[in-house]
Image 1 (spheres, rainbow, N blue to C red):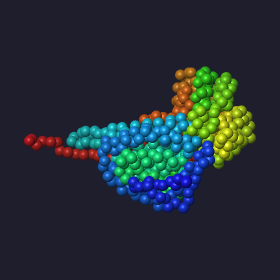
Image 2: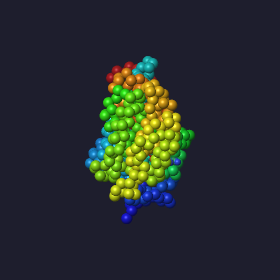
Image 3: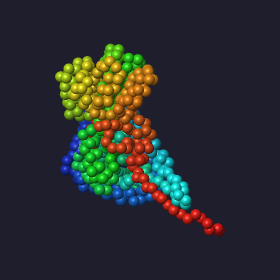
Image 4: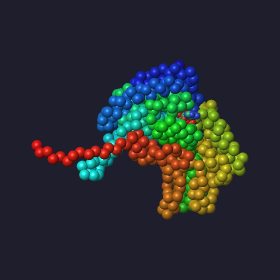
Amino acid sequence: MTTILRNYIDGEWCESDATEWLDVVNPATTEVLARVPLSSAAEVDRAAQAAAAAFVNWRRTPAGDRVQYLFKLKILLEENLDELAQTITQECGKTLAESIGEMRRAIENVEVACGIPILIQGYNSEDIARGIDELMIRQPVGVAAVIAPFNFPGMIPFWFLPYAIACGNTYLIKPSEKVPLTMQKVMHLLEKTGLPKGVVNLVNGAKEAVDAILDHPQIRAISFVGSTPVARYVYSRATANGKRAQCQGGAKNPVIVLPDADIEMTTRIMADSAFGCAGQRCLAASVAVTVGEARQTFTEAIAEVAQARIVGYGLDQSVQMGPVITQQSRNRIEELIQKGAAEGANILIDGRKTKITGFEQGYFVRPTILQNIAPEGEIARTEIFGPVLSLIHLETIDEAIALINRGQYGNMACLFTSSGAAARKFRYEAEAGNIGINIGVAAPMAFFPFSGWKDSFFGDLHGQGRQAVEFFTQTKVVVERWQEWTRKF
Ligand code: NAD
């Protein structure tokens, strides 16, 4: 019998009263794993009211006590790592090793948030005038919410959730309706920590639930991760309603390969970046710009590695790349490959029409390489979000950096070189918030912000680390005058 997913509101698992439901599909096998409700605005309201009620006591709970729940959560996540990773692979398609890596990143954020008792500290000045002191303290903002994308069902809510609750806020999670199972499991673990009811709530759904979150007067802060058009929409609607918002959008990540790069290392790292998670990573390398002689050496090497990639069901340990998320996504990727060819690109390796024995219905696209794409064409600019690497050739690093800086997005840019001077120039000039030097997926550790720029981010404060603490707290400045103590006991 198909599992019917429930929401978790005010410490209870509740049947949804949704009128619309979706199948949750394993993209490798096309098996229906569960049915997910597209919850109504009324359900969001109940969750927000529960979170607002829980906030009253939660903010009074000392930070040192609040993080005890995170210590417990970390242990539970570690103990259940394999099961969580399996669920991610089943609903999202990535390989088991990728799913384990994803959950490790989630856990890392829990660990960093355990330092909130010190990270939340303010500062003070004594005697700003005689007998007058001034201090700045941080207080939680109230109820906060995350709206998550499909590609990291386990990790992305953790860029925000641990910081939010450790800072004294209460919370609402809205997972992607395509991959809601992992957060169901995480919610069961959160429940096991003994967290007071209403502190974290889970509401499944899609646009109606999102709009209800954006308009709800009790919800004060929104973290969004997803595609750029939706990020822009969420940011404008949330901020128009007076909320704080941090909205991470899409990407089109360029990588420059200089002639002095170690081609063997570059190829290995680039293949993982472009084809890892089937290219469905916001930090996936999407365009490789070869400079000078790197054109020939890199092109030959990456073509060989791409062709050798083992594609299949991620639960099979020998598999190196799984399917993409849906049939629609597969169709879109294949159409974009065709468009690249129409724009004059040479399809060096064609991953379309992939059939995997035993999984003939699965949404597989093999690694694809497009050569000589038009630098200003649609393929060079559009986020493909699939295992497609496009190659452009330019004569100088200056031309390559200029091309990057003309781009719409600014999530990540990377350089492969053995020159420190070239690396410094690139780090200094490239317009992107996450920079990799001889790194293919420049994913910041949890104690650094996840720094998208341009159309990859709308807002001011990013997720993770200290910026998350800033986002989830509001500062209060107190100036106080006390007469100098003269009385003698
Ligand atoms: P998406 O924008 O389709 O969906 C993200 C969330 O928004 C989901 O929870 C969905 O229910 C909701 N949503 C979708 N359409 C909506 C609408 N019209 N109104 C209100 N809510 C809506 O994104 P996705 O396909 O799930 O994820 C892939 C995208 O996310 C890619 O563009 C990728 O680059 C981006 N992403 C960015 C980062 C980053 O850090 N910048 C990280 C991961 C993914």
